[in-house]
Amino acid sequence: MPLSKLETWEYNKKPLLNQAEDICYYIWKYNPNSEVNESVHSFVKNFKRNPQELQGNTFFPKYKSQSINKAAHELSLICNRLEDNNKFKDSIWLPIPPSKSKADPLYDDRLVKVLESINSSFRLKFHDIFSTINSTESSHKSNERDVQLKIDNITCNSHGIELLKNNANFIVFDDIITSGASFKALKTIIQSNNPDANVIGLFLCKTYYPNS
Image (cartoon, rainbow, N blue to C red; front, side):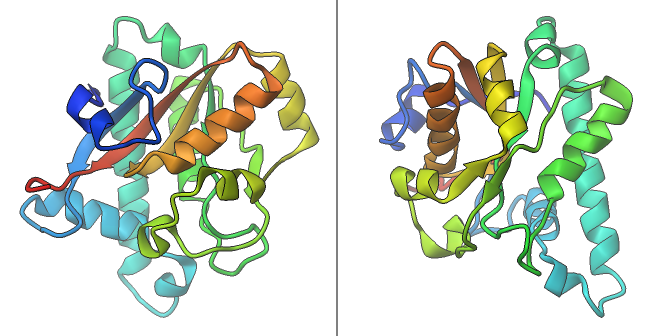
């Protein structure tokens, strides 16, 4: 699959994002209300399975692992075939922290695992420097789109602060973009530490509602 960029009409439906400043890319379209594209729907369902769902089920851990490998494989192919792949290879990749804190039994490091898998063959520069302070309901369930609330609930370790100050280009990585609130929150944190930082978003899927 090629890497696609959010279009003008999509920015018009995402008031939190500015088309000129908030550049975001994605791989697949995901319609939560339809299973017409069954492969994408199945991928998202398995990719997002939490640790509790994996317990006591023979198949779910295997399916989740396959979805992580699928994401890593697709991103590796994309990065390798892009003519300007130095934009990706020379940037610092930063996974958006999940809605659960690292102390929470439901904490899921799926994004880190994807980047670790790519790194084994592509020598990707990524750092897991952000953490959620207090566990919350995931955005797609709570519909929480308040950027400031998200900023206030994210912490960055001391190594991360130095990383943000001493690098110019960053890729914020997440599985799905809907409103863009999580991306906007992380971009704000990055640029509060480095106002001149160039920040783009890269997502596995964009939420897509054909009739909206």
